[in-house]
Image (cartoon, rainbow, N blue to C red; front, side, top):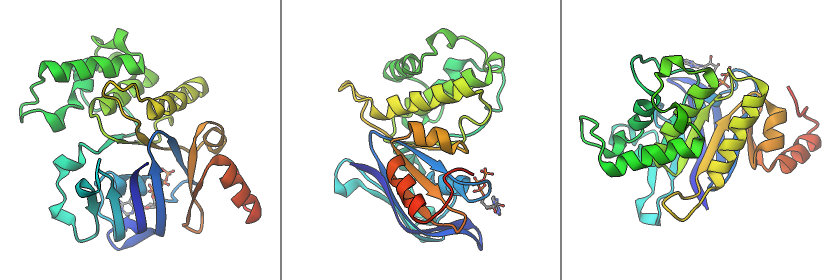
Length: 257
Ligand SMILES: Nc1ncnc2c1ncn2[C@@H]1O[C@H](COP(=O)(O)OP(=O)(O)OP(=O)(O)O)[C@@H](O)[C@H]1O
């Protein structure tokens, strides 16, 4: 099952085209790593898939539970796109620390419920249950009362991942979540996201499609289920790590950069 499909997509900033003719599908239950050199367009693609940037051409289709509740974004859909609806399909974890003070880890995780709460962000008991279970899944129950400013980069990253889980979306996008982490924490984060993608405990958690951008090609080839590679000539190659290695060998392209 796919969570989103991009078709003949052109991405960029205003008139500046970053990549075009992109086609791919994000599989549910799998960790997909988005890799490519600096400046090739990984962040631009993630921002477009998150609905923060409009596509220049083509379409993004977010699959619903049945064909009738798909959400489709095209260059023309612009203001018609219902961000509240999209927030129930896609959650985003950005690089770096949240720019807030005087908030506990639990408060931050609770913000993930905003698509479901009233305008004051009042959490109901059912919302609080999701918050607690997300913190447990990520293994940060012991940090819940800590002020966010006192957490290490790795702990902070887990809080933001728990916030994304709290949003209960079929798609999670992560932009360079491992950028500031040491090697063991990078591996831990990748493994965690792989487990989260595959988790389907029948109790409300369904398999999710996870797309995570990273500079670490070696790690992506080791740990990802699928890889999307944005090449220097602005194509998007995709497949399992093995398929990608074969394709690159065939084209005589270097696997690492
Ligand atoms: N707001 C913007 N306006 C215009 N051009 C931009 C903007 N943001 C990024 N770009 C350009 O778009 C291209 C792709 O940038 P992007 O940040 O998507 O690459 P990236 O693959 O994520 O890079 P990195 O690995 O360094 O984070 C670059 O040429 C960049 O200069």
